[in-house]
Figure 1: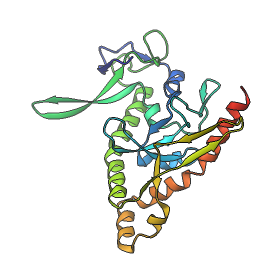
Figure 2: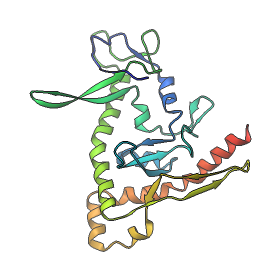
Figure 3: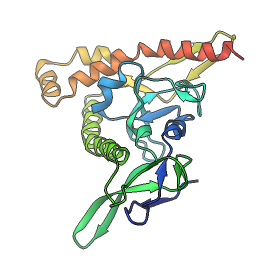
Figure 4: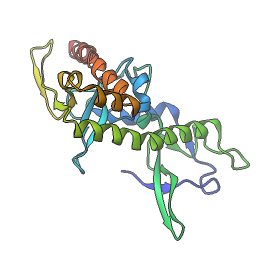
Length: 239
């Protein structure tokens, strides 16, 4: 259960975050949404794909973490085994909310006070005694800013690819070490042949908008699907 409230230095003076619990909040995420500015970090270890938002039906850039609902194969031995943890996990238990007043819409930082990563008795404080953000809170604010600033660019990237009819479903039919198999559906990628067949002017526009490099980064990241299978096989072999 979640309870989101606007963060207030006075009201939440005693609120603390348990850093070890933050990554655990993503332990059951099969996918996690990402933004373009994360691609250079994600490419080291994660397959980057497109999924569809269950509510809007719109495409979303996502890191693939597992092959079935509730499975995160990077979460092992009670820790996240990754050189980089996606920003959507790192920024927890904080979120960006919106407030509307006579001057218009404003973004504000909200906190999930029911998160397992929140405590009033232990952990790292959010604010100093004079109400200023601690280094931990400053880091969280930077992550929220990265996501907020990256969202429109990522949406524009997806829109451009959709308009060029470059998205295609990924067919994953995997046989695991224990004899079981899994057909993974609902994930998409870029059609590499169609991308390679684009005319010069279109390619130049994609490059100018900063979309060509992340497109190829996404395609290159699919090699990590094999390492994800190895993670699954390792998990199955220990049962």
